[in-house]
Amino acid sequence: MVYQSIGGPIQVYALFEKSQIKPLHFKWGQRVYKIAKVTGRWRVPVGRYKLHHFGVLDTQDNFYQLCYSEEDFSWTLIQTWNEG
Amino acid sequence: MDRVILHVDMNAYFAAVAQATNPHLLGKPILVAGSLGTRGVITCPSYEARKYGVKTGMTVPEGKRLCPQAVVVSADAHNYVTISLRLRELFEKFTPKVENFSIDEAFLDITGTERLFGSPVELAKTIKKRIREEIADITCSIGIAPNRLLAKLASGMQKPDGLVVITQDKVAEVLEKTPVEEMCGIGPKLTNLLRMWGIKTCGQLARFPVEILERRFGKVGRYLHLMSKGEDGSEVPLYYYYEKVKSIGHSCTLKTDTHDPEVAQRYLLQLCEQVARRLRQGNYQGKTITLVVRKPDMITVSEQTTLKFFTDDGVQIFQTANKILSKYSVETLGVRLVGVSVSNLTHKASQLSLFWEERRKQLLLKAMDVINDRFGDFTVAWGRLDLKNLHQNNLISPAWRPNKKIYFGRI
Image 1 (tube, each protein chain N blue to C red):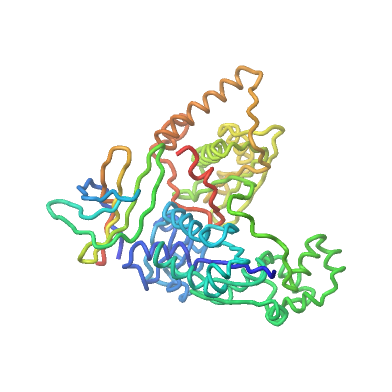
Image 2 (image 1 turned 60 degrees about the vertical axis):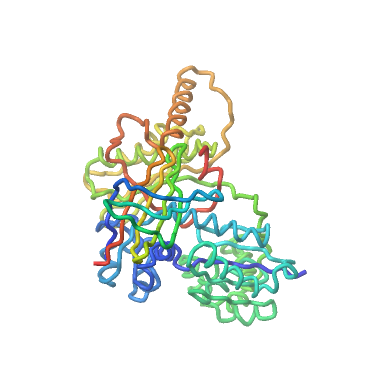
């Protein structure tokens, strides 16, 4: 059981609503993952921008940590949880 | 009107936040550590890991020896801070008198809120429920009592997820058999001193002549006597009051033990720069510089120097700390951890220096701060720092308290 660092760019479909960002789906490789639950959200200040981190579960109950950068509007898959 | 104070203490906070963020960790023994390597120190074991005897402060290999199946998780300071700030926001919905005692503990003065939120017990249950529903799936222990001292004692009586009430008429009964070390403010040294006099419980301390306590401990002796009777007149301050910062410091465990002074100095320079930047962000300057060095055998030594002037300059702090470091024989004794702190603080006076060299330095620091504020810490730094190998610190001191001015300074 370990976190597996990924650090790669991903495409994310997200809802910006009521001053909050809600990731809904993300595309990693050729696969689209539907986000069933956002389990955590926190911000990391880097200079005048912030990185918005999200802990999410997909519909298969797999855990992923996503990150949205205010600086260049990019999304990154930070890490996944590997039960094996 | 009798005061009603709530003490909310989050249970195994860092571990609980990690488990709430990744539900796959729920129910598993986990060790939150500063780093995942063999030199990492456990900052918070989950309750599941504590059953195996794992304690805060142990190294990761020590923890893994006791609980081999434990999952080691890297600390994430920003996640803990974010949740701590949200907890505070929630508490402020019930009372303006909220005081963060640390990152995971808060006092709430709920005197007179009964008609708004129900009885203190009902309010405590509401807080527990709303934390889980609105913030994160984490638990807390709540103590309810007529003052801060007793509320803190009460919250420690039932963990995890406890709720304990100490009413005024039960104070003497509760304290009679309470060990003195369970009172907030009585540490191991004081406990041993009291033991030498045969004092083990608060009841015994209450019967001990206050004159002798005062003769031995001065003002503290008087306070000890009051504590033993459960008396504490201190107020929970209003929400906008932030306690004055007394010192600012950073420390780090080196990647490997070193006997090379150059390596120790590089870490020290980075730490001094971090301290100086936090001083400038908070508009502070300090006079007393303390260096802490931990040897590979885990023995820690510290020494401090007080300057004749106040400073917020990282290089000045480094030069002072380095003088202390040079007295310590790095080559022979070795270094495992190095830390620096600046105390004796004052709010910076905006007086310009008469001397051009000094002014030039101030302008240079200001320019560096502007760039680093915009692009992130260490975007520009002194050439001696190895920017590719900066020490990354995900840890946060448990003593951290919300101070928006410092944490969110200029963001």
